[in-house]
Structures are given as C-alpha cells and as structure tokens.
Length: 102
Image 1 (tube, rainbow, N blue to C red):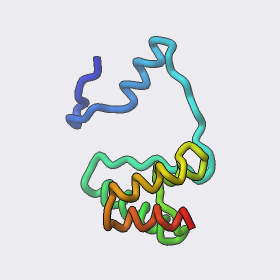
Image 2 (cartoon, rainbow, N blue to C red):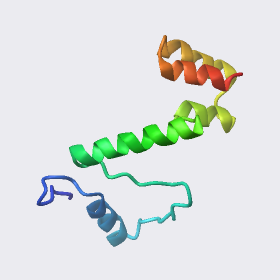
Image 3 (tube, rainbow, N blue to C red):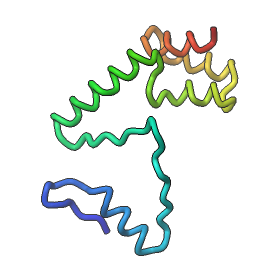
Image 4 (tube, rainbow, N blue to C red):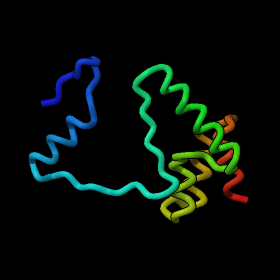
C-alpha cells in the first residue's frame, strides 16, 4: 500500500512502482506541448496557475476544458454542450463554452 513520504505526501512514483511490480504499468510518452506541473507546494501551485494563465491568454483556449474537448471531438452534441452551459450559469467558463458554438 502507499504510505506518505518523508514530506508527508502520497507520491505518484510509489503508485507507478506498484503498477510496475504488478506488470500493470503502461507508459505513454508525453509529446510536444504537454506539461507536467507539480503542485505539491504553495509556490509550485502559484507557478502552475501563472503558467496556465499565460498559455490560455496567448492561445485564447482553455487548458483541460473537458466540455470543449468533448464537443470538438464529437463526443458531446450541441444540445449536451448547451445543457452544460445552462448549468454553469453566468460564469466566464460558460461564456467560453458559448463561444465554441459560434
């Protein structure tokens, strides 16, 4: 089982080791444009937040917007996306999703 590390955190490497020992580990190489952001401290969480903000502002796209990805991939219909927009109400996130329908 996984136990907290000396830092008092559960470590993803421990989980990976367990999967490897059980011959259940599948590896996927992260391609260009992919970033792994460690957010285990206040400082690294702030840095990750700033990174996401800069990328979103420069590209005009939300990062990890599951509804947007689902819609663009054809996994969500216009009706399903509209349902989600209604659920989100008057938020910037809902406004972003509305713009995907234009």
